[in-house]
Length: 246
Image (cartoon, rainbow, N blue to C red; front, side):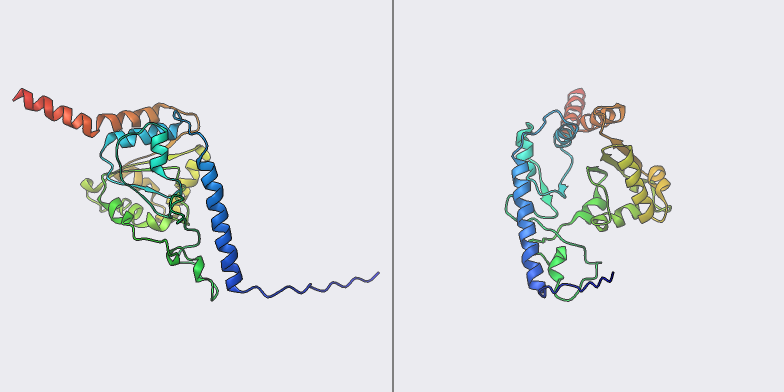
């Protein structure tokens, strides 16, 4: 028996066709996430507790969100009444500005520049690198630190792994992740991206990775207590007590 297969002819796909499909995909993702955003939020989840604690601390100048959902909406749902500043790095659902795509390091075929995130009409300047360098305390929650976004953090982690870094440049860095598997994945990423100097993150900084899978644990409780103890409110109480002692 003989068998001969010929490739079927297909219409030529142009970059404009793919651009249209890409725009439709972006819109569909936005519609899906907007629907998901309407679901009830668990006020007692670990994420909610950490969010409330960070805002109540009052010393975090800005929050950078790599999600598309509106943090002010979430804050209202979980009982946060304080005002806070935050920026969407990749756009948001609220104003239909979500950004999909690849980073500038990727090489694309001619006609496909629309896939670069920085080429999106919604892409804006953010000063996250400067803010990371200036901050004394940095908290990462639910971010894998994967290659797609790692360029935002590369210089920050390399600086904090510099063996010649003076002591006063050390920072308190806390990374929240789900379980031990994701903890290992994050540490592998940090090791690969920082010339295998993961140990220096621990020795030169107050560095920790906290898993949230099992809810409240000793490390999480210690972190929440730290935020309460170092809050602006507690600082003002201390100043008030000292003033009345003079």
